[in-house]
Length: 202
Length: 202
DNA sequence: TATTTTAGCTTACAAGTGTACGCTGAAATT
DNA sequence: AATTTCAGCGTACACTTGTAAGCTAAAATA
Image (cartoon, rainbow over all chains, first blue to last red; front, side, top):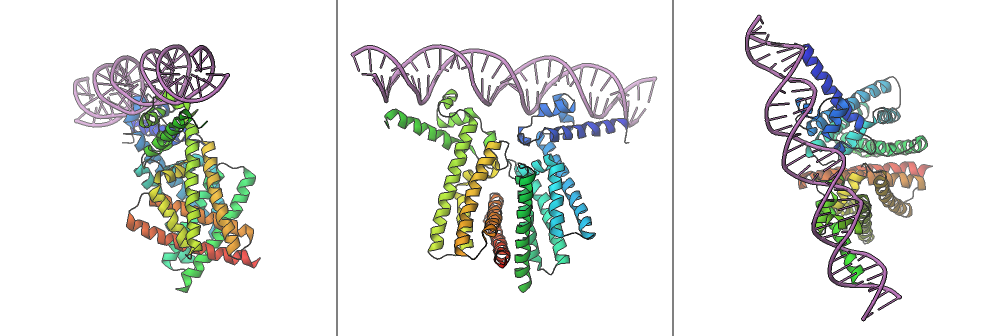
């Protein structure tokens, strides 16, 4: 096993995934991609595509998984930075903004398919985001005095704001991003403060 | 003027817009629409489309304007309800949820084109949302003791959360929506409380 | 009344799409 | 060494798409 053949297959499969990510951009979404174009960029014949994926849909779901993985890895890294003494809010926001800059096409995929035309896609993205929220909620519960339910609602609100700020940042230059980030940090503080009030009184 | 001819033209123009809105759905976004299908549903020949719009793009931007108008009208109505003695947060949320149910395709358009592949569309939706935020900020400034900058940030955060909750609600049944709405209301309270804290101390 | 304008039509075309079918040669298996 | 498996290819087909060109009849204008 792990024969020459299986290895090559894995390689062109990855080539297809990368070709698809490469073709995403500000003016090109996943649903704009065509099987033929993706195959062309990956260097195979259109009909060979089917040796790897049943569908463009299947490719897309694989891509969502991959983007979710990237995001989770990044946030794990953020938690390490926090542990070695950084502000929770600021470090998380900075990490997320890095994600958007270095993996903008992965972010674009999540962003767009979250409200896209395929229920399966929407569910897949929602799952990734829920992971994200739960990890944050878990962290907040362990680090701050906070009712479990409120910890979840707080995390949810925060993740949504961060995600949306990321979406806006995609169209902005450095200066605008700085302002946006500052606003975002204030907004996260509002939530932290409010949740703390309601989440500890009951 | 206002001749029979101009009147008829206006009528089929509106028919095109309505045909396009009708073809939007959970599994069909604006970029999936084809000029031919829209023309067919509106009852004209494909090439006659060009007598009304230069482009599908031009149609789309018109639709965004129309959706934004609907939204603003609805919120004006909400403010009337608030003035005659209702909770600000709860009334606003209820009004928005009505918008999603009664004009779901208009909402879908705004939701999707906000992160779509056309910069012009994204800008148009962003403008509509900014209107929305500014109206709320204005209201908060006049009704609560609150620094102007904080009023804006508070409104922005609130509108984003409401908008996102709407997006989630599209895929949910009544029971899930009720839970979602309850969570949303708590989250808005967090923000109100937090903003009030930071916005009045300085 | 004679002329101009124009919303809508029909026909036509080139380009791009997904995918069915069957072949080939090399790797894997027996 | 003989056989099976299968990733990738080329050809082919039926569709759909946007839109160019030119016509018609009715409304508007002169």
